[in-house]
View 1 (tube, rainbow, N blue to C red):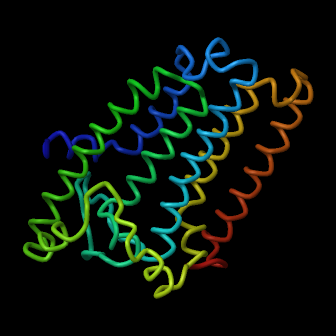
View 2: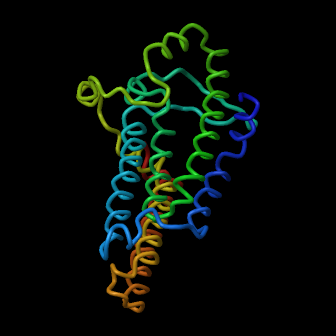
Length: 240
């Protein structure tokens, strides 16, 4: 699994794009009109948004409170230090938990049985292997310190005890959240917009001209916001 995880770690960014593309694979619905009635589309929209937004909130809280400087060096796991503060004090992999919930949520939002039943389990397997590869690296670098951390904090399921104390004892760095997440936010929000407006004509009363105009306005605003943040970051006018 460590070998498999190292392979997927190297190509993890491309894998995430492929999983987003899989949203458009034809599939039987999770919520059909036959079973849930004429307003069946409300179920995937509400449920999907709740799940995917919760994933983004977890990512935001994690990055805003105690960002972990961990990434890839020559296609392999790398970490400058063992971060155990903030949300990392409640879950060892909160960013990955956030990613999983974000993808699961958009899968539900797309009303795709295939995505939820097939793609998400594959995604979970890939993330499990990546985590095992990272843990292998961290255990080798930090030794007993990492072992003690593993005994205290769950790998996947967040322990919400004393979560209020965590938030009260730390300040939220919103600039860091924006600068680290603006790429993810742009792709995520654009995807949600496309799914809702293209998948559910009920939202725009089956008026394709209104739908296209609304889609153009929302996507344009998202793009302008993305370009503004990118400019502020690259020019150094906005720093974490």
